[in-house]
Amino acid sequence: MEYVVEDLSPVKKKVAITVDPKEVEASIMATVAIYRTSVQLDGFRKGKVPANIVEKRFADKIYEEARQDLVNVHINEVMQNLKVTPVSGVDFDGPNAIVRGQEYKYSISFEVLPIFDLPNYEGLEVEQEKTVVKEEEVREVTDRIRRDKAKLVPVDGDGPAVDGQVATIDFSAYEDGKPIEGIAADNFEMPLGEKQALAAFEDLVKTVKLGEEKEGEVTFPADFIAPDLAGKTVTMKVKVHAIQERHLPELTDELAKEMGFESVAKMHDAIRESYRTSRQNLNKGAAQKQLLDKMLKMVDFPLPESMVESQIRSLLADMQVRLERQGKSLAATGKTEEQLRADVKPEAEAITRAQVLLMSIARKEGLDVTEHEVTMNLFQMCQRSGEDFKTVREAYERSGMMFTLRDRMLADKAMEAVYTKAIVTEVEPGEEAPKA
View 1 (cartoon, rainbow, N blue to C red):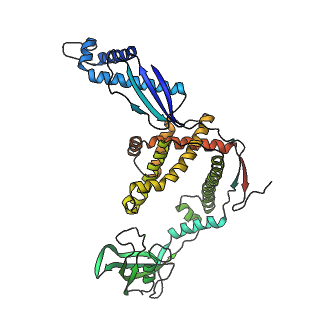
View 2 (view 1 turned 135 degrees about the vertical axis):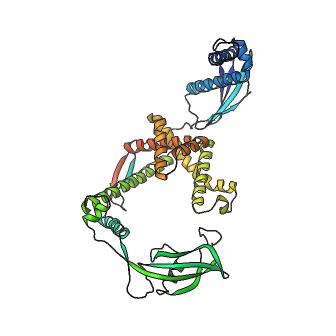
């Protein structure tokens, strides 16, 4: 096998490969030998079918497998010789068949990480906020626990209900005197003052006394989740059946035990630790972002188009998921696919720049991501989202997102390596480190 390398750009290579007739012949014969061990034809014992009969009978499959084996071997050999790793798939251009006694010519093209001088990231200085947990934050959590465990009891008098109380209501909506399907409920418990409903609707409820019924106009916001109601003004009818308020339980060891803790003190400790871990991760992430921004300002390099394209697809997929959760689709944006792609391209390029830098650092540091690590990461993602692991894995493999996931994990490892080599100065929350 002989090959010639052509640099189409700083990040894209094309390799023209020529396979001599002897190697073509050897690949065909090796594949025929493999077939002979497994095929069984009438009149012959298994493994005893003459090679020429096997080749004639299964010619199409044999020649295709021999060709594919040749291509795979050559691609691996070229990558090892050039000491490169494609950042995306390898594009093949050549005949789809090999012929006995003839050389086989084809070419492959692929993108690689750009070659550039890495910034000196060892000893970079960065500020990181101290991890501080305030006691009022702990109290807020315990107050929410007490609130969740509260009992609703009727209030004295006939209202109307006020903020902090819960009104049990029947409600329905009308447009031009006709009921609007889907906007109605009976015995609905509505907390007031917690912004769980439209402000105008809450204001209406807070004018209705116990046992009474009233109607009023309510205008839906222009960005309301239901497009057919967005910006519309409708008539809402409300009847109040009950007005209650929450009676919070005392903060006792018994309440803590109901929540799975030995005592109130242990519950407070667990809340503090949860806050501390979460905040420490956030502060560390902010410091790493500062380090990354510093390094990116020190370098300039071209971006592999395939990596940018992969990020564009990923961002559009995320956008589609967010819209679907709101009952909308990409079409609801009023933009064409080309316009949406143009909108997300700057972000995709920024993500790719960071990823290229970190993957280049990973290469220098000798870092890698194993198949087991990728599988575990995907499994944990599915556990958090409640999605089926097998279904998600197949979707990732089918769409090529598995490569994106692996690259992101490798970039995370590189960022961690940079962080461990940095000089980190802790500062009080909201303050800057003293200048030298």
